[in-house]
Image (cartoon, rainbow, N blue to C red; front, top):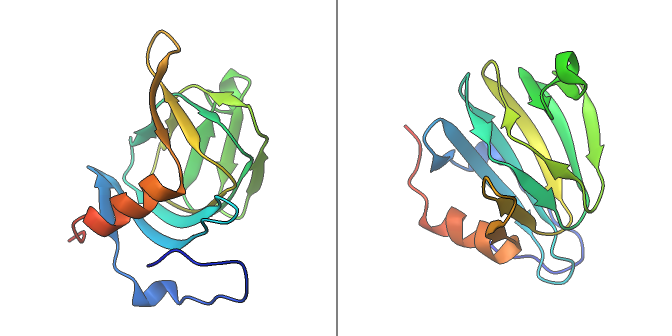
Length: 144
């Protein structure tokens, strides 16, 4: 996967390997764009996986292909539980506490800017932009 300029682009995800982002969390990077800062990936998680607290610096969109995602504690806690077939939009500036995957999940994620990961005190722990995602893809091991 390489960075792509604005224009027509096609990739067959079946031609890409799943790579390890971290234990229990794999991804296929479909596109990064240095012009817009957008990046697009397929993610696959095991049951119990999570994404740490983060703030969106740019909107994001997701489409759940399999499983469930519990955002802001899930529907039982006033948040969102997104199931297979569900689409969601996350506006610029929104903060999410830990996002949880109660069962194995696959989802398409389109991010229109960086993610600012937060520590327990709400301070910036890391900012992940299209360059960082591309570097993670380039360096990641192929999942077994």
